[in-house]
Each structure stands twice: as structure tokens, then as C-alpha cells.
Image 1 (cartoon, rainbow over the protein chains, first blue to last red):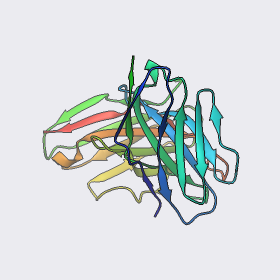
Image 2: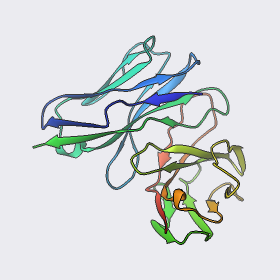
Image 3: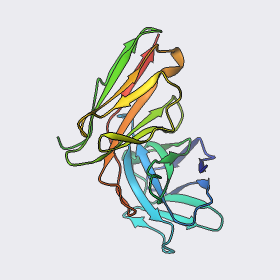
Length: 116
Length: 116
């Protein structure tokens, strides 16, 4: 079974600075998707960024980028120019690609605090 | 509606009672997922519907939990003889699919269930 581990329960960063959230995962599959989700106090899970495992290029979405190390099974999220609105829980998630493997497997989450 | 909706937003019940949680997916989305998020944890998969049928119910913790989607749209998660350990946020998500390619799961705001 696939597992996702986030070893940082809490992180904090000064506004406008850069922060990196860590994630490792375990799988025997060669093709899969990885995601970072943001969950503010409203509880709504919001997709931040996704990475296809077959792509070597790291995904980027505006201030958010990932460092995907497939051999090391590592998938970190970098937030540049942190803003107060970035404060939330962040979850790393895995999804397989084979038929029937549609479910997301989540890590335990990292609570990100932005200090003004 | 524009997004996934869930009702009620909050539900308080007594140990041993029966509860129903409702999810209204995005129109046209054939795939629907239920996840459970315990306090301080990441969401855990419960069940996945493709159309009217449960394609994967491997996450249901025991036979007190049951879910239906009779017309392939709205889904109801049913919990019998509730226990205090069932207290959690129950999240619903929907997506197009299923295909081998990526289909984003859009999440609802969740129902917070409290069992006293």
C-alpha cells in the first residue's frame, strides 16, 4: 500500500520570505501523481500544485514550485514571497494511475504560519 | 451548483444514533469520493463511486458505515450506531472520470460530525 509522510507538523515563515515543506512517499508503482493541497480554516481542500511522475520537469504555479526527486521518493513544496493568505494546513497526496486507483492518499499535514 | 456542496455543515448526535450525511457533486461529474478527516490528521479514503456503483469501498472501517448514490449524482453516507470515535470531518469530492489521465478531485467544505 502507498504511504505519504510529512515530518513537519508545523512551520512558520516571515511574510515575503521563502519556505519549503517536506514530503516523502512510498510506492511500488512507476507512474503516479503527486499533489499539494491547502486547507484553510474553512475546511475546503484546495489544489495548489500537481506533478506527474513521468515528467522530469518540476511543476510550477506562480509562487509555488515543487522539488520532485523520484528516486528518493521525495516531493517538497516551495512557497516564495509568502503572503498572509498562505497560512493554512498543507497536505501532500499521492494518486495512482491504474484503473480503480482513483483514491488520494494523504500525509498528516503541515500547519504553516505566516508572521507579519 | 458551482461546486461540491455538503449538508449539514455540522451535525451533533448522541452515541448509538443513526446519521446521514449528504453530498451534492459538481454537475456532470461521474466520480464521487468520501473521505474522513480526524482531528489533526490528513483525510482518509472511505469509498469511491463511479456512476451509481461503488467501485472501491475498501476504506469503509466497518459495517456500520454505508454509502449510496442511487441516481449517479447525490450521495448519502450513512452511519449506524454511531460511536464517539466516528467524530470527524467527512469530506466529499467529485471528478470527471474514470480515465487513466488526470482528473482533478474537487472537494466540498465537509460535514463536521460530533458524537457525544
